[in-house]
Length: 161
Image 1 (cartoon, helix red, strand yellow):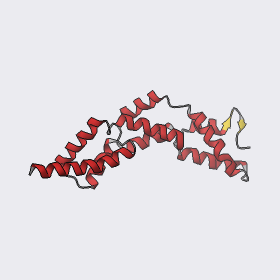
Image 2 (image 1 turned 90 degrees about the vertical axis):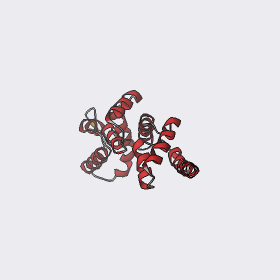
Image 3 (image 1 turned 180 degrees about the horizontal axis):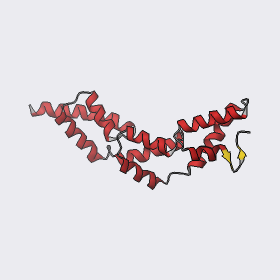
Image 4 (image 1 turned 30 degrees about the vertical axis):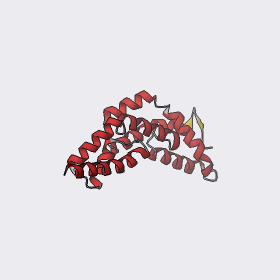
């Protein structure tokens, strides 16, 4: 009987190992995987502890990775990144700690870079329509109103003209 449980554990462990090594995962993502696969609680706990001991389940490392990815590949504001990490099950304390440690870049610069990248798409639009579209983009990306205002109106000069 013990042999059967050991082989079940190894099968589950090998499957979750593939899932957990594709990219960093939050504890919530791992737990959702176990539930989706209908893994019994005791087996779930044993395998989860093995993953945790290997360092494959670490919310702080996951949050750091997630923030770096968001800043590099799909720039978003601090608020949007915070919300995404909360959805992934990372605690507010860990998120704030990691955001502070990483040294979140100047949001205004990030927003300005995004505006500069997207502005050519709207070259044939009237100025007010350009502003509306750029503001909408920045709002959807989680930037604050103050940051949006600074990114779209640079020191009194209109970026979109």
